[in-house]
Amino acid sequence: MLIRGMLRYCPCHYDALSTTILNKFLHMNDAIFKTDVYHGHIMQSSLKIPKKRIAIIIGKGGETKRMLIENSGCKSININSETGDISISWGEIGSYDPLMMMKLPDVIKAIGRGMNPNRAVSLLNDDMLFELIELKSFVGKKANQQRRIRSRIIGSEGKIRRRIENLTNCEITVYGGTIVLIGDDLGLPVASDAIRKILNGAEHGPVLKRLENIRKKQRIDSRSLESIEIKEKSLGFEHLVPGLSNITQRRNRKLKSFQPNNDEDLSELMKLNDDEKIDWSEE
Image 1 (cartoon, rainbow, N blue to C red):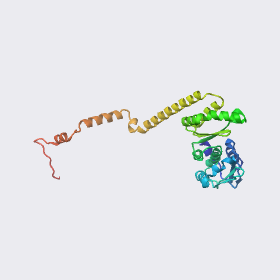
Image 2 (tube, rainbow, N blue to C red):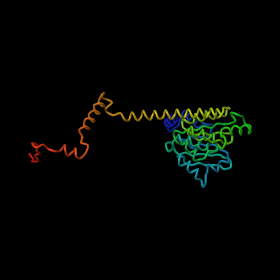
Image 3 (cartoon, rainbow, N blue to C red):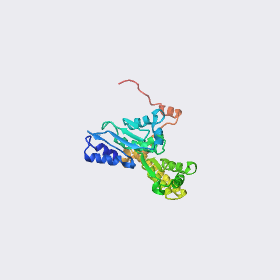
Image 4 (cartoon, helix red, strand yellow):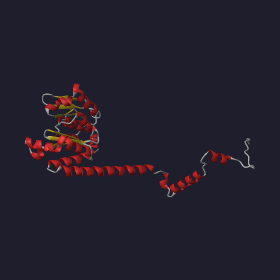
């Protein structure tokens, strides 16, 4: 990934340019970060989540917090249960993955915005992306309008949301005034576009139909790619010499025609004529 490459390229003793690059990416998706740069060390990053989701971040007996630490490689996650402030401590440069430093706050944010921790942690995979959509951007801050638009995305018994998830292989959570999406670079843009169309008033039918068509095309493209890969793998030395493959096939057919079909044919083949004999003596 481009971001991973840029982060790994930054020298251990950060100059002003390196710090600017890091801070630019560390402020993605409206997350609030504080970074202390000291002798080439990034000491801490922090963000804030709704207080009612703090217990979910911690988990039973601290299980969820431990899972996040183990999967991301950070040193510790400190949670202020009174304010909702969360600080993430990282080790010395080179002891952790810079991409994890960018992604873990988004995982915590996704959990804070209603997503199940076991689903949110999938964002730590290299190919997974994160997006947060705010409903106020479409209907303002009025609670009744946000409630109405939420129901359009969720659908009866969650059918619309699940349908979009299944067609795009994305994780989607609608919570309060936000919609959180996690998916790969193929599914996430498609899911985001579908949700934004519905938020702007589009009917469910045409939006879902378009998703189905995109899904079919992706499957066809995937099968075509697999077919090309299999064909390339099957090419051996024969494709370097024109006509060699045909010669090999003719030779195999000719040899097969001379092979005995059963034991009787084999015995007949081994039978000697009256004027023939086998000399077993050594020379």
